[in-house]
Image (cartoon, rainbow, N blue to C red; front, top):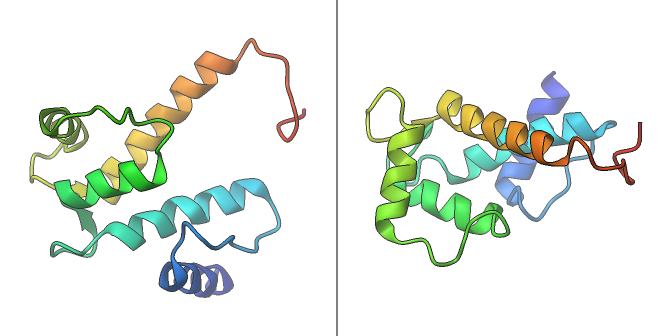
Amino acid sequence: MEAWRAECRAVTQASASSVTVRMARPLEQAVAAIVCTFQEYAGRCGDKHKLCQAELKELLQKELPTWMPTELRECDYNKFMSLLDTNKDCEVDFVEYVRSLACLCTYCHDYFKDCPPEPPCSQ
């Protein structure tokens, strides 16, 4: 676990979006990417354990560009923020962030579940 933390810190310092975490399995890499990406964007507006709306917007635009329509207006980001911010503190904490990614994964699973498997997702 300590090796993972050191690797995650190195990735965060070097930008999680441009460095591949050297872990053995894809799921380990995915978990590290989720954590490191959150840590990369959180804290610029204050609390390093939460995303303010500007941080969330930047994360979505830079890290999920194919999932986020380019024509989103500010009110769309406001609505998205209010959906994610379940405790209504005007910030998205790590649990709220992970819940949103879990919803995205569920949507993707439902959408692609009847598709034939293609590499790299072979069974």
